[in-house]
Length: 313
Image (cartoon, rainbow, N blue to C red; front, side, top):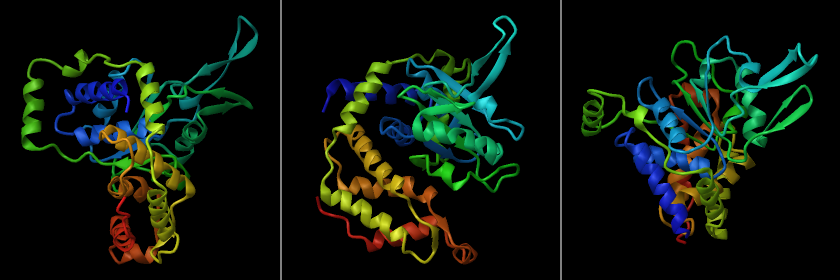
């Protein structure tokens, strides 16, 4: 294990933790998604710190940051950019949108229409954007942190299944414990601590961490465990849309990243067991009958996990 890479992670975790109190595990999961080469969706009620967590991660790294506040009238070109006619050169010039950032905060993504949400599909899957038949490459470290309010709230549009499948993980924040919320109040009596937040690592550190993460060992038995669980979603009578092969790959890579951030140089089966709900729950769809019976996707996954034996090593 690279001590330089791990030290960089610790600095990043500590820096973000000065703003987001008592949520080290949530911070760790966000960084896990990034270092695994994926993207993350954070869903919770308004005011629980989703946006501040995303902004704090971005500000803690000396990289280009973009933010899009998703609204019903937002257009795909507002995200990707568009061709603008330049009177001086008498030619069309490509005006880049906020998606051409290293870290993109897609705030309240489910406030926009599915057409606008889909503008992120190619970028998240292939790290490129195609405008008028021209392909524009994105930064290899490109990372989307999307936030959304619960879909039961007024004025939200459920994300299409193809869009959800592009997110490596979906997590929630939850309300802080009393002591953590008290620290937050005391910290904000006279000033906003976020204004003083400074970068603590550079792009080179992120590249080094990703390199080390890709070298984290995972046994064939653990990979077979991943496949056993994913295959169960494809035969379960309450699941209408099972997990895709992309889910299997995401689970393996997320397992590698989380293991590294936990100080391990190999992926433990227990780590996969712990991460499964974050990686799979948003990727599966229930049958109508299952929903009418009051069942939740978490209940179905719990059934599957209870039926699949966790390898001992």
